[in-house]
Structure formats: C-alpha cells, structure tokens
Image (cartoon, rainbow, N blue to C red; front, side):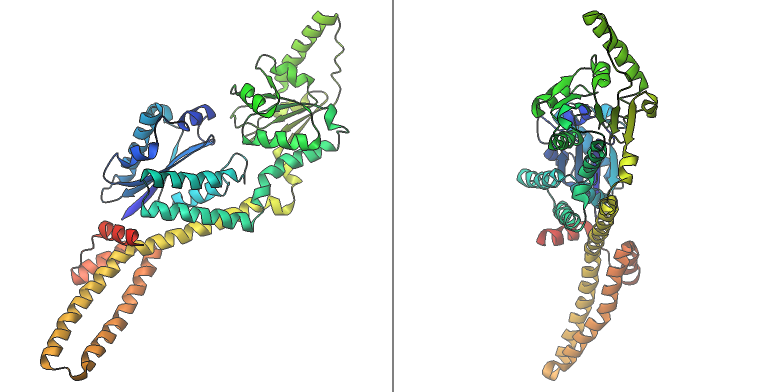
Length: 443
C-alpha cells in the first residue's frame, strides 16, 4: 500500500526571503527526493515565489514511511538550494493521507494563494507535473493526484465566483475610497507591499486614474517592484515622511507585525517638519487634512491606533467585506465545499484501488478451487457442460457479495478488516504493494 505526503512551505509558514531561495534551486529537487530511498516511489515539486511544496509517493511496508519522505525532501532541498534543514524548522508543515489531496486541490484552485482565487497557480501546478514527467519522477498515484487537482480547479472556476473574490477586496476598497476622492490623478498614493496583492492593487489604482504611486517594502523589495511596475520606491528611512505626505496609504503585506502605526505618523511629521523648516524656515503642513489608510493585510498590517491620528481614517478588511456582494462573499466557502467533495472522491477511488489486490486474491483462490472441481466433473463425464456452467454461475453469485463488501469496507477505511478476514478464513495472504503497483501501472 502506498501513502502520499506533502511537505509544504508557503507565505503562511515561511518568509518570502526563504521562499525565494527555495524557488531557485541549483538542480531539480524532485529527482533528489526520488533517489533518496527505495521506498520513495515518486515526487512532484511545486515551487513559486509564494510556496514550495514537495508531493511524495511512499511505499508503506515500513512504519516510518512518512519520516523517510520528509527526510528525503529536506535532504534534497539542502543539496539543491543550500538551505539546511535546521533553517527550515518551523517554516513548513507535513500533510499525509487524505489531507494531501484536499490541500493540493485547494492550492490549484487558488484558495491558498496570497490573492485568493488567483489563476496563475493552476498553470504552475500543471507545469510541475509536466516537469516531473520529463524528469521521470512521477508515479501512477501522483499522476492521478495532479490530474484530479486540475479537474477540481476547473470545477471551482466554472461553478463559483472565486476568481473574482480576491480581486474584489482591492476593488471594493478603492470603490469605498472613491466616495471621498474627486480626482484620482491628484492623489498621492503610497503602497506598502510587493506581493501578488500589491500588483493587483497597482492595476486597480491605475484603472481608477491614479498616477502618483510610490511603494515601500518592509522586506526591502521596493526597488525591484517599483522598476517592474513603473513606480517610485520609498526606503525605510523615508517611509514615515512618505506616509505623512500621502493622501492614501494602502497596505497589503504578509508581515506578522504592524507596518504602520500612530508612531509612524508621529515620526513622519517630525521628519517632514524638520525638512521643511530647514528648507523654508516654516512648516506649512496641514495636519488636519483628510487622509485615508486601507489595510488589506492578513494578519492586519495597520495598528488600530492609526484611527486616533487626527485627520486619518482607517478602512480594514472587515469593513470592506461587509460591502462585498453576497455571491463573492460566499465564493470561498462554496469553493472549499467543492474541493472537499473532490478530495473525498479521490480518496474513495484510492481505497477501492488499495482493496483490489485482496479481491483479486480471493477470486484467484475461489477460481482455483472451481477449476479443480470442474476437472473432476469432466473426468466423470459432464455431457453438454451443464454442470460446469452451473458451477461457474454459482461461484459468480457467491463472489458478488464479498466483492461488494470489499469496496464498501475500503471506502469506510476498513480494508484491513477484509484482508485479515481472508487470512483467517482462507489462509490467503495479500501482498498489496506489489499488486497495487502492477494494477496502477497497467491503468
């Protein structure tokens, strides 16, 4: 019997700096995983700027199959990227069994992305399988897993509004801001963040007519992002002053700490006043003019105390979601229901495949007995073959219920009960791994 496992590091568990290092290996990682141990049957690696995931198919005659699979993955990562296992501690999770299918189906459908519902990840998942095929590291079960993932993604895309859900948060936030902005072209906009959400925000801002956009990155990526999108980069040193000067600040980072607070405004005003006094001998800054901060971060990027700063209003995700159209608000829940259903079907088929060796063994045993009896009947003279025909029909009828029960028990997670019964009643010992592989390869 084989078991699937997934070693996953994503924007939810690891820093973008670490994920970036994992996404540019010196050599393909999947072959290194597959070559680690003979019980590793195959490996597919999905590596993007927001996640690194290794899907591994393990032969399970050894009780430590999962541990071996994780060891194979961490060893391969270190060999290909130079990132040691010690540095990965706390930055990855391990999924096994039925959790693997539901997770991959969620990933492919965009439910685990920084921008929920983004479509790029579906293509990345498909390309990961194609690359593993070229490298010769797939297995029958991994092929089935990734093909079902693409089917689940298409089902989610065609049946829900998930493709609009993530982008809607940006759009809705800007629509709410528009009620107080007469001319977007005059607005000084400061964007904090450089991920996929930030890119979607830049596009939405330009659709509104915004022209004066600058960007700051707490992780130091502002210059690269600014060059790609035609923006101005704001350094850490000038960030507080830029915040004070901005009419609109939009934050969309995955930072686990607040990137903007009342203290940021205080520091920015002090720096700005000093600069103005030095340049003109006076400080004509209007601290009461209306400013807006939109926090699109999860977790929150902005300290709630920003709302206490005079002239500053704070709009967060909770408020934005209250204005979301019902269809889009429910899109994520509907998509997850579809993913869970697809994962259950995947597991059900897998259990039926796992019980196949036992069914084959029982039928082989029974038909072996039948052939012996038919030989005796023929020796005594079975005119017209009527007795043989009756015996074959009887055996077919008798095998129907055990075969049906085998599939029912397998889907209920009780395949071992069936195998144990064959051993106790008939002395049939099932060598599952080898037979499963033969059947899977033939299919």
